Length: 74
Image (cartoon, rainbow, N blue to C red; front, side, top):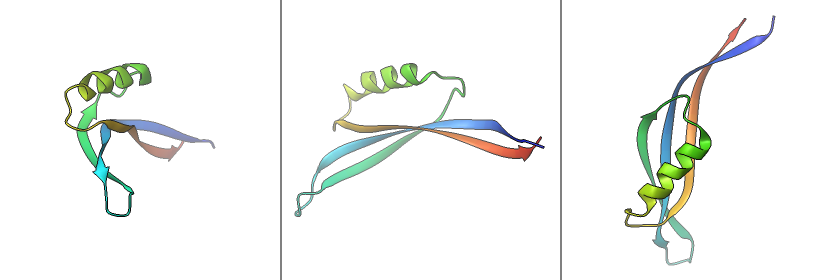
């Protein structure tokens, strides 16, 4: 039998670049916004984060959409 995955939830995290440390490496801060619509299109998520980015204190370094799934034997 083939394995089947079922999406349970999706979360969104925004990674902000808050500055540089003494060694010159980036200091990153992750802000997790929690659950988002499981069927949210990647472009829609990107557009929303870009709009949110305009009001954030620090620039957006990375957008993370994490889909949580369960895999079962179908």
